[in-house]
Amino acid sequence: MPQDVDSDPPTTDARRNLARAQAALVATLKTGAPRPPGFAADQLDIASDSLLSKRRRSLQKMWPTIQAALADKYAPLFRAYARDFPFADPDDTRSEGRRFARWLLQHADISPQTQSTAATILLTRGFPVRMIRQQSGGHLLLLRVPRRGAMALQLHRN
Amino acid sequence: MNLSTPNSQTSLGIGWRPELARAIERRADLGFVEIVAENIDPRDPPAALMALRERGIQIIPHGISLSLGGAEPIDRARVKRLADLARRFDSPLVSEHIAFVRAAGMEAGHLLPIPRTRASLEVIVENVRIAQEILEVPLALENIAALFDWPDAELSEADFLREILDRTGARLLLDLANVWANAANLGGDGAVLLDQLPLDAIAYVHVAGGEERDGIYHDTHAAPVSQGVVQLVSALCARCSPPGIMLERDDHFPPEPQLNAELDAIADAIMSGTAKRGSDQRGTCGPPVACGSSQAGVP
Image 1 (cartoon, each protein chain N blue to C red):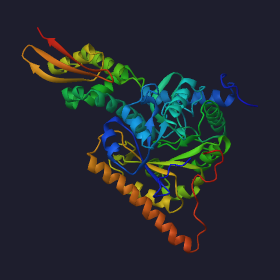
Image 2 (cartoon, each protein chain N blue to C red):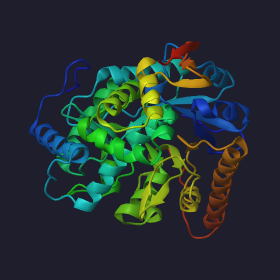
Image 3 (cartoon, chains in turn blue, red):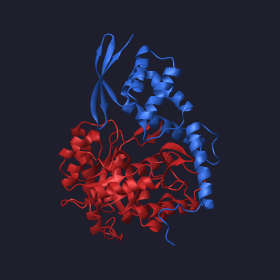
Image 4 (cartoon, rainbow over the protein chains, first blue to last red):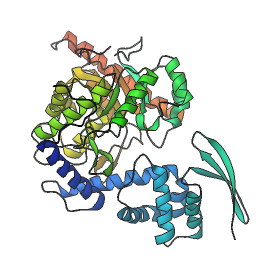
């Protein structure tokens, strides 16, 4: 019998059981929830680290400044942040950037330079930004907004 | 589908990324490029892509977020986006993965393997069929790299794949780097797996680089293609001529000469593998398999 294109398939036992198993697995990989029976602990640890590192790399790709500012502290701080926010929309790195910036400003003991970088991410609403000149008393920013061109922004510090 | 250029049975391709656009534009021998569906707006595609299309280069939309192996009903909007892209670029096919990426509203953030059980097979077959109803072009399904095994597998990797393809009529996007990664991390022999896979269903082939950390091979697409993967290209082409083989590079983009050298190495491996088959053919082996030749309904 042909499947109606606009109606979802019936929830069979196969789907129900698979849904439970997949949810338990994702919870383990992302939140450290107890490991479902039968899986190898070392394999799941590696997979969990790999998911975290992929997420961290996609953030630093959009925001190399935050990685540069945090240097050695970037990876451990991102790990701590991900414990508070285990899930992210992979299609929305901008939101992740803003959330991480806000978390850094609220939770982490970070340098003034990192505070400034984090504040910039929030100020530019997570759009990629390139600083073209730094003046005494403020920053001149060039914002590159994807597919919408560039704009200049002057930041003043008290 | 015909991805081939006039000079060779196997067409050379690459994953199109904005960072590589200029190098891709200047490379004359590419027959196709693959685009990540989630990153290209069908209503407003990059001009560089439209220019490639006008040159006759095929463009294949590749989805990463359909979660075809997921227990939840698939999101039709994501399938429609693939369909829209295929229409926009007049694509011969689209592709996705044998994987799931979310469960109970939780995004995993990457492709995860599904259990190789009869029950899981029922679910993915049903999901694939729903996607196929919406798509106007054939769908190819990719084998993924997994860092862990589900317990209680009822089918081998090759049998599981073959069942999915047989029951849906989908074609195979064979990722050789993933074959390599799984053999390295979970055991097995990549070349032996090639003998078990349904090579006649191949639509095209992925090749990529990765890196080894603490004894684990990570399929990062951020490093040069390893020698072992290049050898698998050659081993595959010694068995059959896939319609297309492409390089995936997603990060740490190399300078243009290095990128070209990697594409050249893949092209060389295609040639050397094909040449090997020629001599075998004169020996005791049967006629070469033309990958993809036995699939009906593909233009």
